[in-house]
Amino acid sequence: MNDSSWGTPAGPGRGGPDQGHAVPAGPALDRHAAAQTRPMPIVPDVPAGGFQDGHGRGAAQPGGPLFRDETPHEHPQEPMPSPVPPPPPSPAPAPRQKKSAGRDLGAAIGVGVGLGAVIVASLFIWKPAFVGVIAVAVVVGLWELTSRLQERKAIKAPLVPLAVGGAAMVVAGYVRGPEGAWVAMALTALAVLVWRMTEPPEGYLKDVTAGVFAAFYVPFLATFVALLLTADDGPQRVLTFLLLTVVSDTGAYAVGWRFGKHKLAPRISPGKTREGLFGAVAFAMAAGALCMEFMIDDGAWWQGLLLGLAVAASATLGDLGESMIKRDLGIKDMGTLLPGHGGIMDRLDSLLPTAPVVWLLLALFVGTG
Image 1: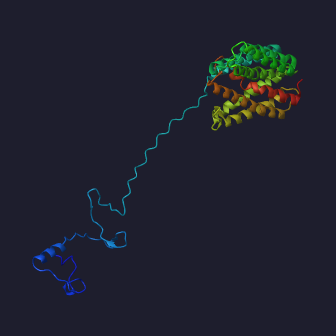
Image 2 (image 1 turned 30 degrees about the horizontal axis):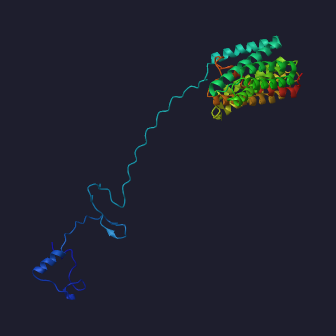
Image 3 (image 1 turned 90 degrees about the vertical axis):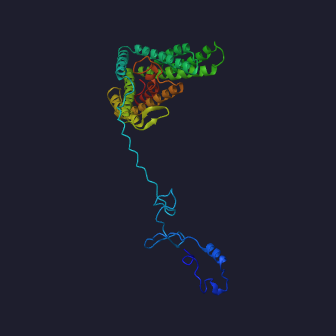
């Protein structure tokens, strides 16, 4: 193919010979023609309307792949989107597990009934016998607390002065009233300080601090139960105190286990829920209204509502307080003496801080006589 079909045609205005340019002849003409000749590209058919090359100029659309790794549908201006993989199949829902109570309910109920029988029998048959029950519970609770402190924190709170002073504190509160309880508390703290001096001074401060704390936490708070017993209707007051605390714990446990979804204090006690707290308040207020109306001399039902509300709050705080102690010690229960319950301190946790609250409110509502 010569250059007359693709090159610039000769003629006027086109650079032909009429413009004064010399045209080589002979072999030079042949070399000139060869240099100006190039192969004609194959122009594919352009669809109607054509397409633009991105600069507004018309361009021919390629009809096939320009390179081996291109597909017939690829071109630089409009890359084909990568295929979207189908979504993975959703996993089958796990079977719903039945809620567990988290403890041996049979053993817990049996132990609770046994303790209740001992308490009621000693409470209504002979008051001093119930004071002895309080003293025994205090000594066992002190033993559990000091043992766990020594095992987990290497804190040696002296048990002997705590046990003797704790039992004396309960008896003094029953015999001499609040003044006797305060004096016994002060003497117990002093005995702890002196007793610890018989050992090397290393750790003295933490040991006596733990000892004074234990004296206040267990026997001093328990003394208010003995103070409740000194009134004329003392057995009914103590029974009201016990019933409201147990009902509050039961309401919190039952409602929280069945409906609990929102954690109350997850960092302290993950098992407690706000729904359980509402259950504790509702149950305790209902029981308080009944107890004040039918068991306490000169009591009124509305006083029972306030009493039940206060008991629910103090019992919950007491439970959280001991949970905080056990978390710091890294243990689940304070002991194993009571099957299904743990140790004595695991049952006293809500009773101890509730005793002074009940004693104070009953003194305000109906007096201390």
